[in-house]
Image 1: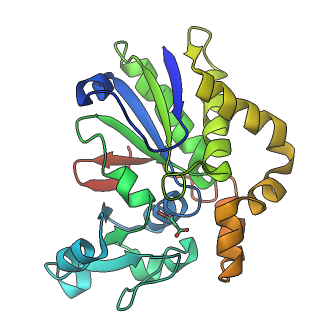
Image 2: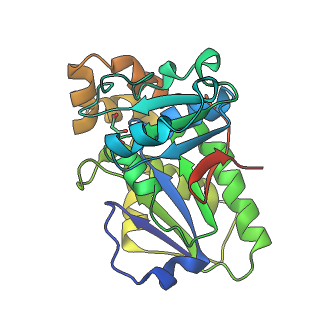
Length: 247
Ligand code: MLT
């Protein structure tokens, strides 16, 4: 089994290449974290959208009682939205039983990719153990699986520390139980970033570029939430156009 990591969301293979892989999609700050928060607090599903316009138009087709509109542009809540991209916006009071339509800058774009793949999971530190356990289940149940691809959303197409270190952490958890696997150079890099900084995670992530930007616009609390290991312990998968709690 191959363990690969895409440290930026750039894919060169034909779609058919990806069919036999399981994906772990990561946007620690903050889409993965907010989505895990939504599902932990009882949202029925999240529908990711690539643009604000698409999100607004989909939202307008749903009944008032069943919908929530969330997301960000430049980190802040767009006009008319019910919630921004802070994990703490998605309280049970707001989302329980509802469909959350979400548009964020990098995360939701990534979550819309690889529509042909059956095994796609969204991971942050807040649901990392649940994600790793779910992947182990997928590995056991699918002997023909060629491998796991960790994909980091990054920031505007660029590498980000927080996604890569979370990728390293999930690779560490998955590989502990297996001997028959190979890791690519990028997976090794993610793993070594995690190994070097695992005892100093908060200081490391607080120093990342996107984290500094979020702090500058008043979202320091979100970074702390995003770093709480297993705070929202739900495995999150993407099925068709919808993001749901995995069984
Ligand atoms: C994104 O999807 O680009 C983000 O999660 C950005 C953010 O809100 O911090």
